[in-house]
Length: 442
Image 1 (cartoon, one colour):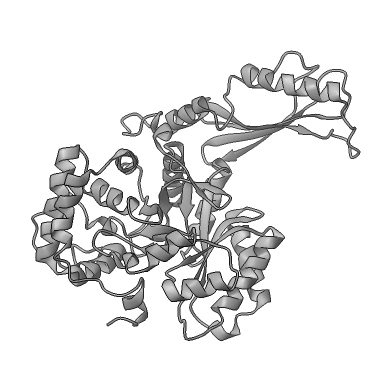
Image 2 (image 1 turned 30 degrees about the vertical axis):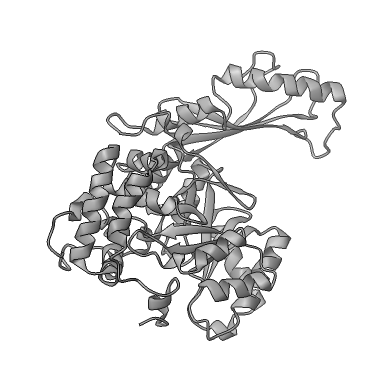
């Protein structure tokens, strides 16, 4: 810390995983216990670190002392001194992102420190999100055992590579708690969670809505939720509009920043919008195999400034070289909930033979571009109308570079012509989003 201070500032340290987080209140010489600098930062076991925040603050005493203009000016000038003296960059600067990525990369990792500079951001209401979103459905079960500490480490590595947005839900097992642990290390991450309604739909009341939102805040360790997406299992129970309005009230109160929905088809999404619910996103299944969102929903979302956040864009791994030129897999190969779920989309698309034609076309484009089949499949979805981002599972960190590569890929007219030659043969899936799953489309 700056040698100009009368004495080293007191440090309050905590251990978060393998990272030492600290905060300090520093009052420069001659300013008594009045206004000072509140310094927050962290250092990893290798000694690398970031100042997460340096801000004006009241004194250590219970009665803040107003700062004069000269004092405030002095404190502002001292800001850079603090940064230089600690040897740590300010969070949010290009150098801090590179240093954060470097501290997260173990020797041999594919991710380089400059990866974050390659990831653009998208405005979603008041939120700035990454177009690749860390999906946490896998933490709900059905994807094998996992180590929570390793899950947090993987999220940190993805964040430091520029994938700064997380998708979770109140029904994904311990997912919100695990994401909450991650947020202690990367508090600037944007978290999209869900308010899922499956049972007792007619009995949901305002008090219950508020309690569940507060419970999510507690699990995530935050005072407000960045984005809450409403899922409603049965549209025959018409209470979804009222529940969405209660969520809107909590947004106005400050407990929620933005409101989204999950798997709302076009007419029911329109119903919410017409009722004045400020929906900014709709999370839906959308891939080159499952293009139901193109049957009216994407056009409506484009007109209504609603972004589609898409899951299943790589089919849980089906859209990869692993299944290229292979026989139809049995249940032992489809060994995760994701693979089994997305295999049904392949059947509706036109069956395994047509799917092999699609994989071959994707492979042709991938070889031309020097990327993977999954990259091309991801890029295809990102290029579609109203799409704001794709949600990809992040069980480990070995695919970070591959995921980021999709954002730097451009598909030209020839590439799309190759893909469309196969898509023209597709038999489905038909109807609006989530129609098969609801039993609306047989």
